[in-house]
Image 1 (cartoon, rainbow, N blue to C red):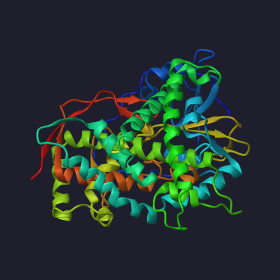
Image 2: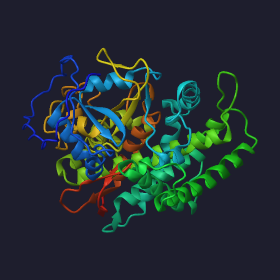
Image 3: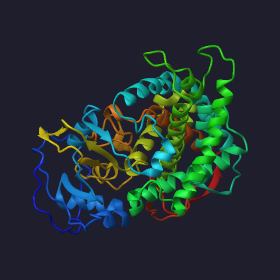
Length: 475
């Protein structure tokens, strides 16, 4: 791509006040025009500005420069996209023209060479093996456990009790994913493993934002040593479970959890995943199914606590559809407002907030060749909060997802990515979020202190402060 002369970073332009009028899907739009972004400081590029406040930095790129802006993260030069049309093109591109960016040593320690970081033929083989274990039919078999885990937690909360909302939700989603993945909630070991996964998530996010991203693999900082200890605890338990399951005499097709299905999977040549490959896929599914869903639910309940009308409508829908009985997967489609609440929470606070892809030979964008090695960045945060696609973008308005409301353009909402590299567990996560939210809201009203809460930027967007909720039992 031909890049214009660099400019200094302007202040973010005031956002236009958007009237809540229908927003039609945008036309094809003008041809892609890439402009030079802010000057950086060699050799760090824009790392300091990005690391100080990534969300503000990316928003200023969008508002101050346009839909395609160059910038650099240390020596890594790239272009930041803000138009859904261009993002859709990148995400839908062939796997051999764009590949996922390796975001650091710590991330590799956690997910290994799972499908999320594999390339070429190895990626195609692993995707073909992993995808069947999270298809909608399989997700249905896990749904009852989702509701049961949420009900067991909520039934243990006392009226008037104050709870750490994120910690409680993390325990629920961890029990769900461990039950779905391993067929067990692991009992007393679950809390220790949850803490290890939390340490790993924080470490990966901190490395991605800092200069340690460029340290050689042999460097052992205190953060990297903590990461290795956390991954060691995770690996010990996962390998124990793999060993137990591999040694169990089980008729083909009898396993109903994800681990059994991973062990039973065979590729086109009839070869199974190796124990290390099973470990990598299991830990990746665990991390994705645990932290991302608990984060989305935390934000959903935070938003509902500040929107009494939306919460009352949620409770009314649950009373009408469920009539006091437990929620099941068959209720998913009937819980229209509940699904809209989840979707709007994912718009405002997408757990995964940034997606980088690396251009390979033959990559193109809007008909223009992209130099191999260029990093193409897409941010769910900036696109989801763009007033061009969402009127009053910073407001919590679940009704914008009503079937009668004007549809947002394709890829203006993409919390699970898209195209060949879309999150394999997207269906699992959406069903889990709806069933858990329905179960909790049916039993309790969770009140939070008034006031805004900023997100903490790590690997995921987490609340920056603890959210202490007061439980009010619904009768």
